[in-house]
Length: 180
Image (cartoon, rainbow, N blue to C red):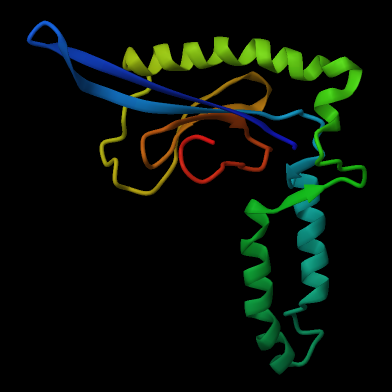
C-alpha cells in the first residue's frame, strides 16, 4: 500500500416546506496520501533524458542504419517516446506492502491521519465558496488543475466534478466507484 486514500462525500440540502429536504449539491473529495519516499514516481527530467537516449539507441532512425530498418524503427520509437510522459519508476527497495507507513511506530501514518481532515475541510470550503469553480464544459473528459501547493501537491477537478488532492509524482490510485 503506497497510497492511503481518504474519500469524503458531502451534500448540501435546501429546506422545502419547512421540513422536507431537497438535494442542492453533492460532491466528493479524494485525498491521496503519498509517502514521498519516491519509491514509485514519474520520470524526472534527468531520467526522461536517459530513457530517450536509451530508446534512440534501441530504435535507431538515423543514417547509420539501413533505410528499411529506420522506417521500421520510427513508429516503435514514437510509440515508446509518447509513453514516457506517464511512465513510473520503482526504485530497487520498493516495498508496496505498506511498511513505509508503519515504520517508527506508525509516525507517518499518524501524521497523515491528523493532516487529512484539515486539508479536506480547506478544499471543501474553497469549493463551496466558489474559489474552485466548475469548468464551463463539465462533460469534457479532462482534469482541471485548480491549485499547486508546496511540496508538489496538486488539487484537481476530475471530469465528473470530483476533487482530488495528490502528489504530482505519485501514481494515480483509485478504486472503482466512489467509496470502498
